[in-house]
Image (cartoon, rainbow, N blue to C red; front, side, top):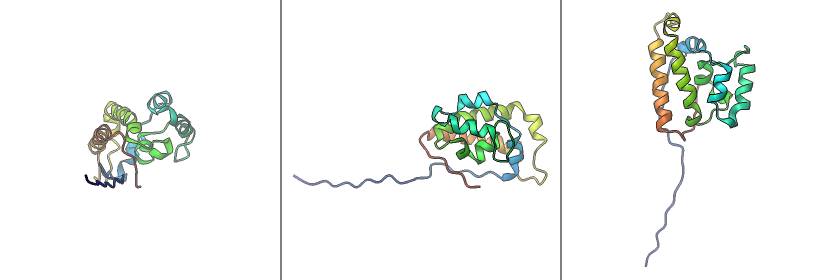
Length: 141
């Protein structure tokens, strides 16, 4: 006979990280989520936070949040986990692709970042959320 002793600890482990220039914030802010669409995409427990975000965005403007809000300020929509973020990213990606010509006019003049950079970032973020649906989201601005 023997004694087996095991110690287990759940510790935060980074499963994905990516950086994007804030120079693309203006472009992301031009990708607007419609009210009804966001309600479908937000998990039911986050609807009240999402509804508040429609009334007052981070810049004080009224109206629906934008891709900027989703990428840079997910906590204000009540988004905490990758599984909650994925639908918003997919819709944001769809809107990005649909507005390509308009958005390319917002490429930063200093050359730091581009429409293609933002699209690649969102696509990679979607893949990371699909691979790690239980991951907690943390952003640093």
